[in-house]
Length: 129
Image 1 (tube, rainbow, N blue to C red):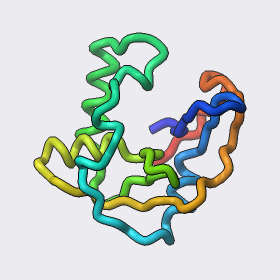
Image 2 (tube, helix red, strand yellow; image 1 turned 60 degrees about the horizontal axis):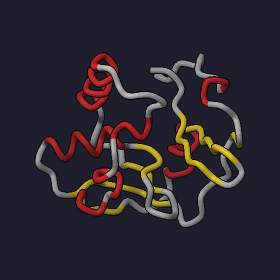
Image 3 (spheres, helix red, strand yellow; image 1 turned 90 degrees about the vertical axis):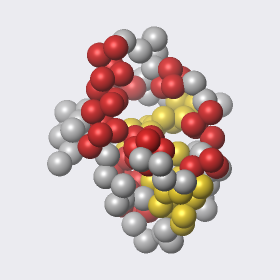
């Protein structure tokens, strides 16, 4: 799997966090049981994460990621309650009929690795096991 980033728009430009770093920083946070109904992203447009409308191929790629998602790892929330990592696990849990999911939440968000950098310019060549 290629390197992954979490993106969020800000007044400073696009913010990008390295997901591997978020996972490492979240390891010691308490694990919470969060109702899936509380996850705001489930009510937001899926296409919001794409620069252009998704293709059927890109949907298949997401379905494959959902299928291989491991629910034994908690999802990661920002301090504002936004999913920073784990939407494929959220969808897998929802499809499986779960009503809650394990999560950790930052009380203060870590500083992003990149500010105002186009996602196509970020390093993706590092493979993640």
